[in-house]
Each structure stands twice: as structure tokens, then as C-alpha cells.
Image 1 (cartoon, rainbow, N blue to C red):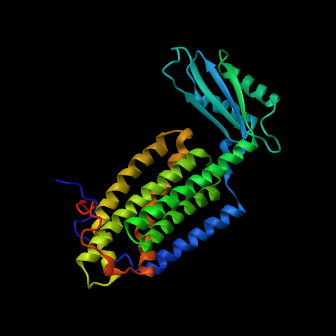
Image 2: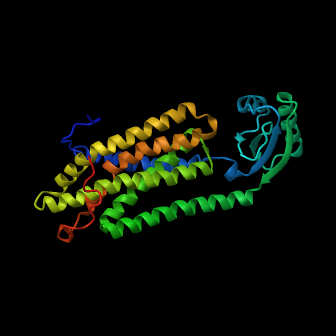
Image 3: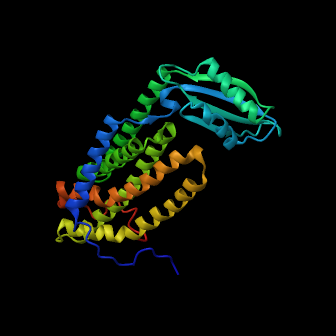
Length: 320
């Protein structure tokens, strides 16, 4: 017996509400861009600059106790992570306390550092502070620039790949879906004021890969069906293709979400932003593969005379 989340044969008309679904996507992207410019993102230490304090203690690191002790100091974005290394001694417990730069300052003041150290010593008298390092606004600005470039280059590489593998209409549809996914993810972070740091950039790049994988599977099945159903209207062929890959899409997204939701609930504060971005990205990425990319391709049309019987068939045997 095999687990089936959807029936073997489905005949869902994914274009029945095409104007509504595609229109909602366009409105959501526009709103995300407006919110980004009006509200902005809650940049973390990586992008705003700040100070990192390294701690060492003979006692096990209690991240919760550290965080609770520092909270009354009202220092804004404070990230506390325990550091593990095979070279550490058994009684060498290391943590990194990262504090964002305060308004108008490149880094936190020496008085603030002393206050943090005194507070942590109140939690654990054996704690020491081997190093204190600061990240200024210049470095943070470079990180923002490199993060934007990395996302743009990834999108460009995907555009070229899809263009070469399929046709330019498919490439435009795929990139439109990726822009939709990235814009909505940034928009949700802006609306809720969630911390945006380098880990979220990593999540965005992962979302691009996850979304394009799902889109390529649908496109590959579409190309096969264009050869199989030469006289059938393009809209109907697209519906057949999405229905045939629906089982695979639901199974892949569903199992991924199970793991992500478990991490979101149990993973702790350190990875919560990354996991939330991934969870949201899987949802919108699956949606865009079905309701955005194919709508763009349908609007642009396809030269069906260019379809070749032996063109790209590595997904032909997918159990979907």
C-alpha cells in the first residue's frame, strides 16, 4: 500500500478562478513592495551593525537565563547562541551574545558592555568574556549589498536555465513565480517586524531552489503533454499537467511542512526566523508553481510546433 494524499486521478480546473488567484497574487506583490518602502525591514545585527561578546563558563550555557537577565536592559535585538566545538574541554562552555548597535551609534558603548557582563555574571559567577568584537555600519552596508546581489544572481541563473531548457515563455513564468515568492516573504517580514538577517537571505535562496524545482516538474510534464495532446487547447493541457503532478506536489510540500512546523515549534528562538521564512516560502512557492507560473505561460502562449518528441524527459517517470 502507498500513502496517497490526493486521489490517483484528479480533474481540478485550476483556471476556474484564474482572474481571482492571479489578481490576488499581483495585489499581494504590490502591497509587499509598498509595505517594504513604507515600513521597512527590522534588520538584525548583520545588517545594522552591533557588538558580539564571547562568553566562557565552567557551567553549562543556559540561553534562556542569559536572555531573561539581559532583557531588562532594553538593548533591542539580542541574539544568544551556544557554540560547540570538538576542541573544547569538557568544562569549556562557550556562547556568543550579539547586541545590535543602538540608534546613532556604530556599536554599543563600553558602559553598556560592562552592564551586560555584570548582568551575566549575576547569572553565572564563573563566566568570563574572552573577546568583544564590533561590526560597523560600513560592513553591514556591504553585507546588504552582497545579499541583494546573491538573490539577483540566483534568479538570473534560474532564468537562463529555464530559457535554455524550455522556451522563453516558461522562463518568464518561472521567474515571475520566484519574484512573487521573494516579494511576499519580504512583505510578511516587514508587516510583522520580524528580524531580518543573513539567515533569512539563506532562507530566500533556499525558497528559490524549492519553488523552481516544483515549477520545473510541472513544466516538464506540460511539455510532454503538449506532444501527447497536439490538438487540445493549451489551457486544458495545462490543467491535465498540474493534475498529473498534484500528488507529487502535495506529498513533497506536505512532508517538508511537517518537518518545518516541528522546528518552528520546538527549534527555539535562534532558528525561528529562518524556519518561519522557510515555512512561509514553501506555502507561497507551491501556490506560485500552480497559480502564477502557468498563468504567465498561458498568457504569453507557446509555439507548439517547436515541441520535440525527445526533448527533456527526465521527469517523465515521476509517480504523480
